[in-house]
Length: 77
Figure (cartoon, rainbow, N blue to C red):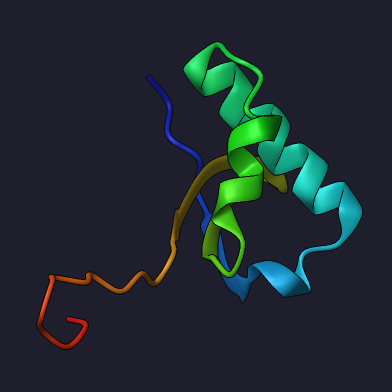
């Protein structure tokens, strides 16, 4: 297996994604999970995304969404 010489990463807030990037990410995730990922994408509101590119092509994606954990009678964690 030949690995790409360069892999570049881009880290950005979801609000900074342009429509073409968002569509490419949904398509990538849909292929990876073998489902239509569009409905799940909506749950990622406020996410920070990490995009990986090899030779200019989007090849990987990761993200996180900050959430608060609420336990009854205690302040959020």
